[in-house]
Each structure stands twice: as structure tokens, then as C-alpha cells.
Length: 316
Image 1 (tube, helix red, strand yellow):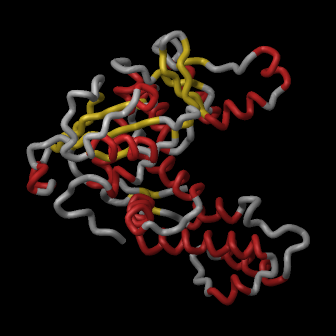
Image 2: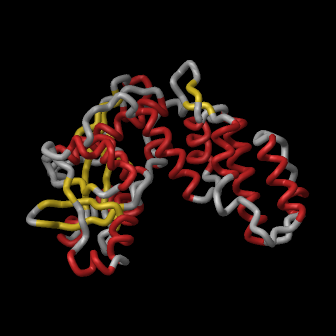
């Protein structure tokens, strides 16, 4: 339900917007007021139809009004931007208040576009970290990421409580199964240092930056951070940013904090001219860390706004 423009970016369509109009948060319930029903019917007929604030304010239910304001703001940014990628860059750069679900949808769709020809199952599984929170655990010496929502659903099941969650670790011998189970989010990913999962995440990061910012980069995992000189760093999540801030200030971090570092990546630019002068010959380090209770929530918008680029991409 999306088109591609001449650059390969995704163009929103009326059919795509109708998916949002069909969501249970938006479809008027039986007790909805006339104003809400009229608005919904009009947009089903023409999803790009202009909507003014007064039409939304006329909706009687406060929660419905809030949902409509968010949806129309999201739709209008898509219209102004002309593509999902440009809209995402705008949302990330303008720090616009937007429900996280909209950003996660954009990220998932953009990554699906980026990885359209990818045949290595570890790469799209690693890409799930961009839009699906993970729960981290150490099992038999391996650092594993499992989908938080899938784990939560498993824990609510009486049978799973008796027999344990049915979580497989994605590997070469079961990778073929990923493609028909990808929407179940039931594979764990091994992010142990020096293994293929962490390298696959670096691959996704590089593809994400190249696709959105149109610059050539190379991203490789670094196994040991103590010898790294942080000329520039980007936290890939809130905890990674806090750790980066401490290291930037030459503060030591304790073993417990160090153990929460999931990945450290070294990013180099293919075109030094795209980078600010003092970083032309310097790498950028990317820090990914879990929370103290083992949650991992990657923030891909930091890769849009945090790099030392000379001329940021023009926003829509």
C-alpha cells in the first residue's frame, strides 16, 4: 500500500492512510457522537481531505479528540514530506511530540524497504531492535535479546508458565524458519561480542544511515571499549547516552555499568567532506546499553540527529 519515488523512498498513499482509519482507536464506537462519525466517514472517502481544528474539537469524547489530533498531525506531516523517510527525519529533527507507535511504524516500514533484498535472516532480526523493545538475558555465557512483548505474552500463558517460553535463538541451522515466522517475533538474537548477531546489528545501522542521510558509512563492532578515545559518540538509547556522557567526562564506570553495555560500534565515513572539519579523520562511536533491569530500547532517531555532519539533510 506504499509507492516508491525515484530515489527509492516510500510514498504514502490513500490506501495506506485507510489502515490507520481502520484501527480500533480511530473507528467510532457505537456511542460516538455525530461529529466523530461524520469526520471518520469523510476521511474514509478521502483520506487526504483537509481537516481543521474545529472539526476535531467538535468530537465529544476527550480520548477520541486526542487520537484524532495525533492522527491528523501525523497524516499532515506525511503529506508535507512526501515520503515516509522524509517524515521520519522531520519528526526526529523537530523533536515533535508524536505517539511512539507512529514512529515505530515508520521505522519498521523504512527498514522493510531498506532490507527488501536481504537474504541473511540475522540482519532483519537485528533490525527488529529498531522498533521492538527487547529483554536481555545471559544464558550459558551468551547475551541474548528476546522480544519484550512476546516474552510478556508468554508469561501470561498458564501452559508457558508450566513449561517455559518457547524461545529459539536464531542461528544458521534454523534461519530458514525466520522468514515465515518473522511477524511472530519469537526468535531470540545472540548479541554476544564477536558473534554474528552484533555484526548484523552494525550492518543494519550502516544501511539505516546510508538510506536516510545519503552518506556512505562503515559500522563495525568493537569488543573492548577501554582503549577507545571518544572524539564523538552517539548513544543508541538513553542508557547508552548516559554511559557515553560519563566516558566523555573521563569518569570511570563500575563493573555493573560496564556489564550493561550491549554493543559498542566504530563508525567511519566514506566521504570525509560530509563531516565537520574536526571529525574528518576521526571515527564516531555508537554505544548501546540495557537498563539495570535488562530492558533494551534502541532509539534510531539518534542516528539521524547525532552524527557530526557538515550539512544536515534538508528537512521537509
